[in-house]
Length: 357
Ligand SMILES: *Cc1c(COP(=O)(O)O)cnc(C)c1O
Image 1 (cartoon, helix red, strand yellow):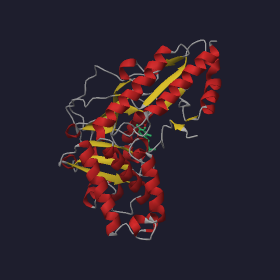
Image 2 (spheres, protein in one colour):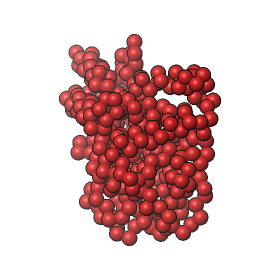
Image 3 (cartoon, protein in one colour):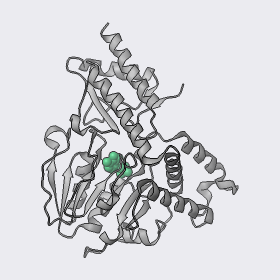
Image 4 (tube, protein in one colour):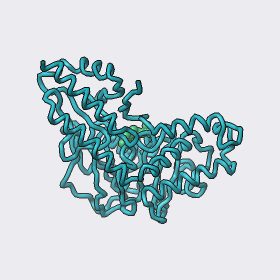
């Protein structure tokens, strides 16, 4: 029986993307040569790069002021690229979780970087509000979806300074007003493709404003100039990302997937709120539509392992929570279906009848 995969990342990808990747590993576009043995300078490969870039632009309605980059780095290296390319004197960060904090730490090595607001006081279970963004910052950095805690900032905030966002785990789940951002970046492996490639959507005129020497590979301008092929790109990861974007377009694009994502999240949160055995950990107003975090309700904590085993017996994979939150986390990214979510809901109900008989 097929598994219901709720892994946080690397995560479930559309079946058609996986199938097409397997075919391309054997024979890339009928050339008789495997994708991973094909020159990245070949016409057949450059077409994939161009198509992938064009799909990003189309799906997110990215204006000409911005360029899309594919980097073989992961989001964690972009934590460093951000201050390298943007920090001259002072940078502010919204400290909403472990990833946000790691991003801040990288900047502190290069200048005066600090948390403008933080939700660390309640284990990052909410998004800070009512803070003021200082007008003298080189940039303000946000993490739109906090993968570990299941909180999400689902609006494009007004910001008096260049706005930079790590959107690793909710990119392509909603329409974004790209024009409000100097930079949007993230690892692909949560919603956009497999691990091994990171994306960056960068406003070209936001670069070139710092005085430091930027090492070549860390300079966004180099990657813009070389169309993400300064060095050998991660061809396999980009290929699968392209197939994932093609799938997204085929199911109606970002607006259609947003509707489906919201429906999945509402289905699951409704069960968490109804079922006395479970309780959600994120502030209701800040609940993520990508990562749904919950724990056993007070009095039922001893049933945690039993529920995990029960879920495993129902072919449910990957719902163990991150160690810093505990409990459970169901990651319901774009490729996860309503049927997967309903299988999890049924599992929670059946567990309830078993326990509360
Ligand atoms: C997973 C994740 C990262 C880290 O991504 P890597 O590609 O593994 O470096 C950073 N930020 C967020 C929000 C994430 O979910």
